[in-house]
Length: 332
Image (cartoon, rainbow, N blue to C red; front, side):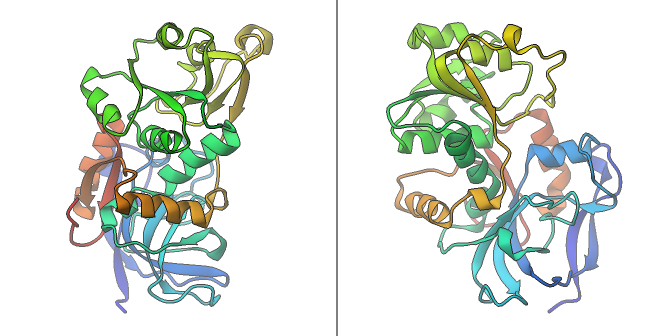
């Protein structure tokens, strides 16, 4: 194998120009770790937070990337066969050790999830963190049940769209928000029942459709919209705080009795690879291949266009997941 690889390195926090594509030595897996030949990786707000200097516990220089999709290249543990298709995410990737913005990455074997699929690498690369976060939010965070109603605040984010797809597969009625009316068709296209244009007062719109309030709410925007999302939820309903698209996640001077509507429950979700069962991943990919589910993929880039990809993520202009493929781009 080649002695070097291409990777995206952040020397220090700052603008997109602080991201540099460099030649680095191909990493060697430590005991208990697996080396993955990365075919594609998705972009996440977590990496934007790291680039902007908002993340804690990061040392520089650092190869970013909290997820990666590809094939096993070397596994000293003997757990996976060479060439096995795998996904990985979280566990310190891109923060405490080098992550997925590279042609090769090494991760602990326990955070590697195998799968088999003939889908193109671009769509596969969109899945790991998006599906893990959406699935974990619905199951761990909300304990969502068939027949319930849910409002997804931040609906055109990749996690928001994945959550809508999963919620519809689970038999739920889905209300989803967007700040841009131009993005409404994207939500309708994945099966959302009611699209709400977010003007800051979504609770009133929700209660016009569901007078008693929704059973569940997924908060992906952050603390600025959380009070209104809580007001959209019924007594004994659940709000799960998962995302921070606004880059704001601290509630100042939090007084629970004054902040929380009476009887509304507030939870949070921030999971790991272990929260995404192998069979759930495989079932989702099989459903996509059969045309029963969609991967909310917006645009595909290559490594040389990482600046453009990060700028688009930062602008909030995407309608779904942004993905980078490390080699020749697959058709989408």
